[in-house]
Image (cartoon, rainbow, N blue to C red; front, side, top):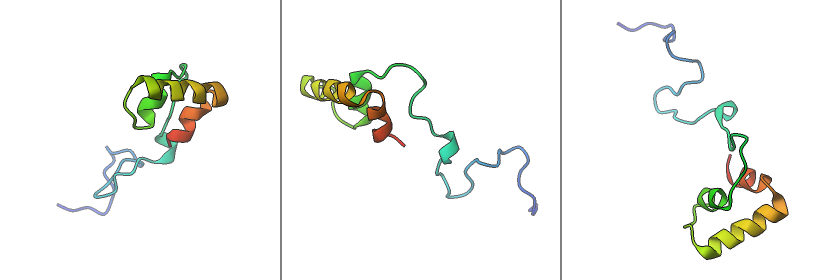
Length: 73
């Protein structure tokens, strides 16, 4: 049976049908903890290598935790 009312058990921001985009207000880039060079390397989609860890350390020294925010939504 089809109804014209939305399913009350589903939150209003939950994806429906083919819409699987997470609303901006539900996205979080950090949980308040320190950002490690490994976090930055992985967020950039790179392999954890000595060269990439050095890049991440320099970037964190220059930009601080905001370096991770720039990579993630």
